[in-house]
Picture 1 (cartoon, rainbow, N blue to C red):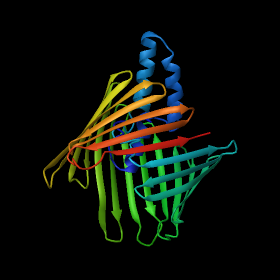
Picture 2: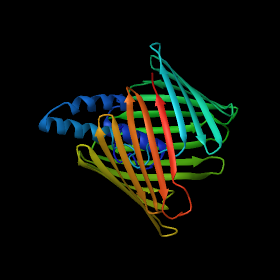
Picture 3: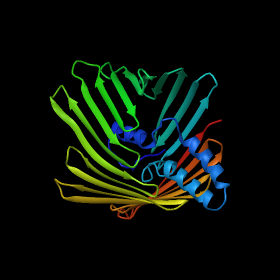
Length: 320
């Protein structure tokens, strides 16, 4: 993963297109980054340091404060075939409840069909077509049995601009529009949502981001202008980075903050820590024990809840 301050919640659409704009490609994935990291680790001297620093800035920075933290028991099994078919089964045990889903992805040419069936027999389907016209893609999604869940998304990507729009396929649709302009170093973005049923805005968000090889900083106006967020992430050395996020809510004058760190022990192991102003301390250790397969242990302690036991979680992801 990559992109300017990706740990900030700018809204799903705006965050995605800023991510794509910053990297100027949507072809790279986490696994590609891991392979590059392993190769760079075998280098020497300043050449090794620069290579590892660049790769970490693209793949370890992402969602440093939130990604992979899980305080339940989770199991994921993914299987891919050479025909373009992929199958992923996920199970989650939360307290005494068990949730699961089966996700199937089929790719053929420029078209991708993604279908998911969950524990409650809901069927979610998304059909994505790339290059409908140059630098664009369109997606049609719907959920059964919710007949009002249909939605059409159209996305346009350019090296210095990106636009993502969506409209609900029902008599009173929800309209959403996200846009970003800028470059790999500086980007401006915004997102707006309008509910035609109530003739009111459901959200409007704006943000600015500065991205450098060693750090990334972002300033965001969220929650319909009711909250201001500032985020910063910095590479301390080629294997360690730290991040901080502060938020101020204008209506209640409430201030919150979260700080965290991520350290690559070796090409296969990452250790993360997180501390929030609400007194919660969390840590995470993730190990790639075999190619593409991860085991993640997470723990969280609430210093303000003295009588509460620490939360612990274990996640196992298998990709044969």
